[in-house]
Length: 234
Image 1: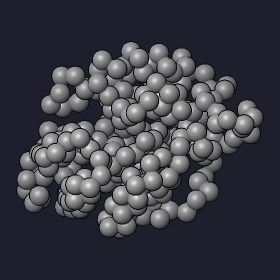
Image 2: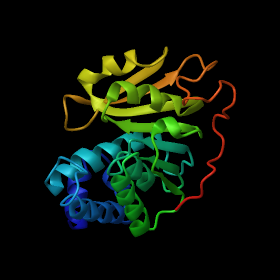
Image 3: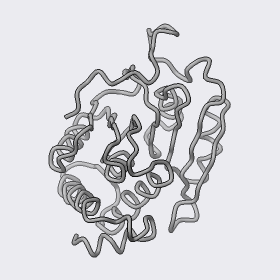
Image 4: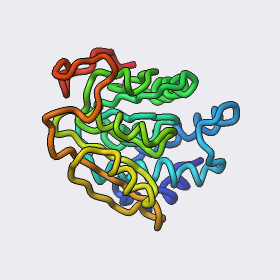
C-alpha cells in the first residue's frame, strides 16, 4: 500500500501533521510483512489491507497518542503481542520507547523478530515466553482482547511496576468484565475513532502494597518493580 493511501486511512486516528514519512514507512513495512506471513499462519482474522490498517494500526496509534508523548522513553510491555499490536505502533509513535513484546507462541514470536529486524527498530525485545514467566516489570503494559481473557488480564496487571498503567483495547461490552478481574484502582475509557463499540481502557492500581499477580514459586517481596530488562534488545 502506498504512503498516500496509508495516510488517508490513518487520518481518523492521528492528525495529518503527525503522520510523518518515517512513521508511514514503518507502518508500510509492517503491513507488507503481515500480509505475506498471514497467508501461511493465522496472525489476524482481518483479510484486507484497509481493515488491517484501520483496526490494527489506526487504533494502536490512536491509543499511543493518548498515552505517550512522541519523545517518551517509557518502559513498555505489550502482552500477548501476536502480530505486534498495539505494541509496535506505540514504538512507531514514540521511537525512544523501551519496548518488550511478550508472545508465548513460537511462530508469532518469530514473525515479531522479523518485523523488528526488517524495520531496523532499536530498543525492542521479543520474549517468546508466557506472561507468568516474566519477572521484569514495566511502567506501561498494553494488550488487546486475547485468548483466555479472564486469566490474561490479572497477569498483565501483575507485570506493572509500582504506579504503572495498564492499557487495553477492547470492546465496550468487555469493560465491566475487565475491571472485575482487577484489584481496586482508577480507570478511564476513551471511544476509538470510527467505532461505537470499541474503547481504550486504562487502569492504575490504587493500592500498590502488593502486586496484582506473582508468577508461581516467586515469594512476595522478591521482585524489583521497574527493574531494567535483563535481556538485550534484538
